[in-house]
Image 1: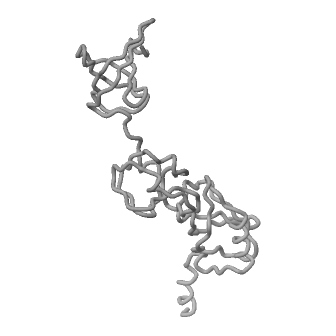
Image 2 (image 1 turned 30 degrees about the vertical axis):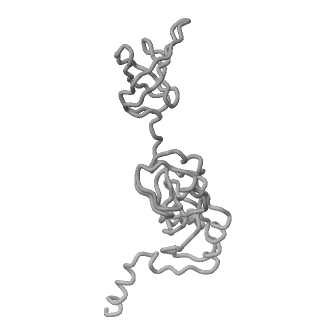
Image 3 (image 1 turned 135 degrees about the vertical axis):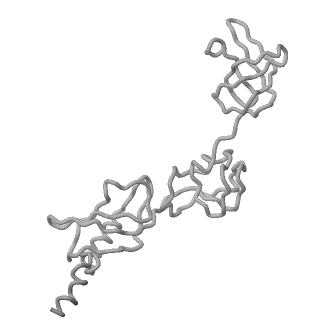
Length: 225
């Protein structure tokens, strides 16, 4: 009875805790990663296996269908014969992306000198990667960034093309009429956005659409003038 009592705690342990991988099993996993595990442009590199399945020999490995993003830790699907295990692993996800080359305060306009495209580990990050420097140049940071930080699309926004209170050229076209006059923007707006502008000559506030820096087109009855 004493022997049985001593064995019970061991028998109650999860099967994974008792597992020890053999060289063939390990090699099958190494081959899986060496063949390329790529998700949305990022390549996985194995750091470690947290628990091995209770078996020996080669295993067929695959990514779980539930995988979302590039997590630092997830469970691989391991299959052998009719058996299946979910094996927790930790990985790097390597991708070419833009990182900061120095500390930059929030609300700064990004320039080429602040950015570097390099191979970096994106594991654990959520959001869309910035793949090229030119995709970020001229954008405004929404948060403080530090040297080496990975730049994501939600870290920046496009600055307004026209600022509130800015003097703009109002373009009026109606039939064969083409007039340009000066107005004052009532708020900030980006290209293609509708914008209320005060005509400085008539003092009327009219609906316009932003065409370019410092230029808006007057709208008539919901259409461009």
